[in-house]
Length: 525
Image (cartoon, rainbow, N blue to C red; front, side, top):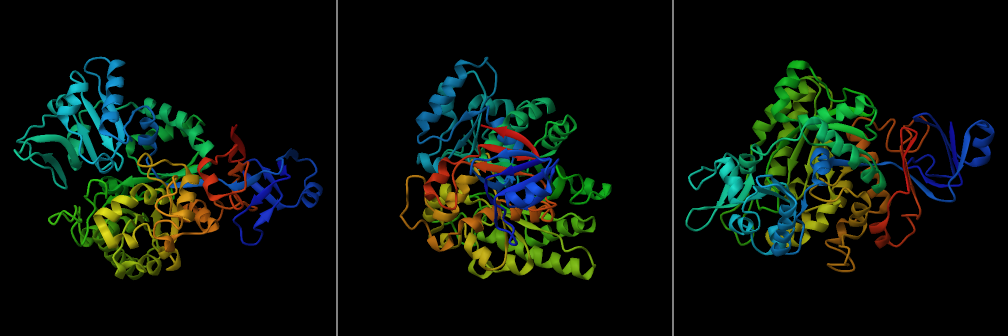
């Protein structure tokens, strides 16, 4: 039994918002209060003086690709200001690679570069190695000629459904792969083994603990789940994981009768994941009106609301909720239409009122702003995306951007907020997300002192709830997670500075000096 005293504890529990002492027995919190009372009630507890430090509930990233993030730590970092720097980094990796070995990278954004990088340029620096570089959005890829040869891609290769091979004016493929076209190359890259994935995840955990994360909602696929189960069986998994399953496995889940929430408090099944559209970066998010400067481009809509409803109806019969990627205003509209049908179906069939989600809710039509709250749909949003995307949103969406990344609008209309990062699309650092929430500014202070569309700012307390209470609710764990209160799981982080009183910009360098998961100190600086 541990008694942590001399701390400033923000509990996120309305009945006792601030305390100085917390008592923990194995993985559970027994009591929270003042030192005199708890010392007398638990005289045999091992005392630990926290030196006046701040304690918060452990934070959760409600949208993270754990396999992709973990393996991505080993890839070429392509989030550069120029194409030339990206090419230089690829060339450096080639020097330490065997001929024929795949060069993998991640993080580029052609909007930052001002132009696309193409296969011919990659060929110069990597003539003897296949190269595959994923965009920051994870909705586009860049490959060289060697990679296209291995994948059998030529100028005669047709565009796959819901994808596109970019072509030049003469009809030749450029090496840019949009949406599902990425799979044409991805499937010929040697897959990492379950052991390699698990090993990468184990190495990634301390990075997340230092950032203040004690839980994640994972959106990678079967091999990610297998690796997590391996870590769990070996008692090496020290993050709470809600594992969402892809819609292509819905039939198997239905046949098995697999329900949302199956598993334990450390690793459990979440919802069924569906992609409704693309992303802003490659201009594939499905919009009602064209992208500015692209009169014929309204993005890519993967399915309509009726088809999504059919998936949701089947999932609901076995107690699985839906979680749907929707970026553009048209995509979100179709999802909301499907959810409206699904709520009526649940009610008519006396089925559970499931905790369906929309992932991203990136831009909404004005008529749809209040619909998530009315239907009790979780708004799973990524505050850091606003910082990354604000210039693109203004350039390609124009006035529509006023209702993009609109956390305040969703909160005010009664939606539950669950915040994350979509890592490796953006950093999973929740303190960067908190800074985005309360300032709507980049680290350099742009675009203005007031921030980008400042009416969408949140208070720090509201933003913290999005990283603690919202994810717990989405995981059906709000009765034991997200707060520091009796009968709750002992997941917490220790901070050297008080985020409620420090300058907002100090959040950008804040990290946990000690992280506890299930009553165990898993990280201490």
